[in-house]
Image 1 (cartoon, rainbow, N blue to C red):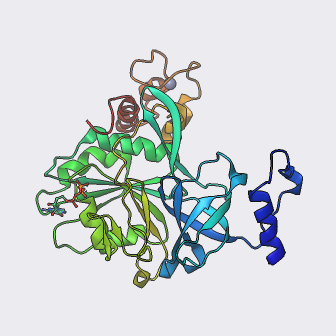
Image 2: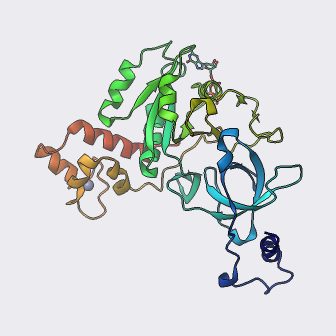
Image 3: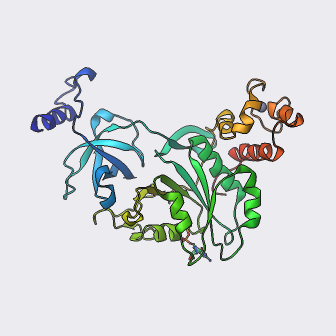
Length: 338
Ligand SMILES: Nc1nc2c(ncn2[C@@H]2O[C@H](COP(=O)(O)OP(=O)(O)OP(=O)(O)O)[C@@H](O)[C@H]2O)c(=O)[nH]1
Ligand SMILES: [Zn+2]
């Protein structure tokens, strides 16, 4: 063990230029500990030591030099070395990022083609929308659905404030997409929501006022999202940044799972989303686009789109085509925050 940490030390702090070992000599970090990145704050990471997920032991970590400019984002499964005791002034060093099973990306701006991964390894995107006060914004919901389908995350509509308005009318507009949904109301129980959260990592997305903080606080007691204090972070983890934050589901739920709160994520540029990737979320339509002319975006203005051919032949469902095209159009409408 001692020899091993000396290796890391030697590697991390080369005495002078040119003494850095070549790739083949790099340490293999055998025995490094697995952890999950729960939040990012100005180059410093809070990581949860995975084996101790249920008691949520969390420590600081920084990126070790061998990672170079590789991005580490919330949700990343990483391997860490160094002092993992969590005592004052100590921090682990992230030496490796495990391959990601999913990446939720955004384009910073629809005009800016730079793609950024914001959350890694999520399974589900929970689109939190109030049924009233504020009114649902279908453009935003559609954009979130595009982001989910593109990232390969299962979408879930979480409709809050059902005490103010029935969800029936709203759900009509989403029926043909087949998106699963749950409803919450003031004072109502959250059994339904819980059922959709256990065993997975869910990203919660919603614009201001929809009741997302209320929901997060009710789901994970002890998390005061309003004031930004995260009790789970061993007293030292005042969470002041607007980074996404992963919260472990309470151990008493009996199953692991995480929710990722996204307070700072108010815009969701989708310029990177390719129509051909989006249509894979519509397996019933996908085949019809095989005969499309090259570069066809499958939109309503495409003269020879295979979707129209298949529609005319009665091979596909018009509602589904309309829904797909609605999402396609939402991709390039103005931003998440209107
Ligand atoms: N009637 C009703 N009001 C609710 C419900 N959930 C939340 N609210 C209220 O809606 C308002 C906004 O709730 P928040 O939880 O702060 O909303 P948020 O989405 O986190 O919004 P920001 O904090 O601005 O990001 C508060 O006054 C809540 O009390 C609900 O189910 N029914
Ligand atoms: Zn087409």
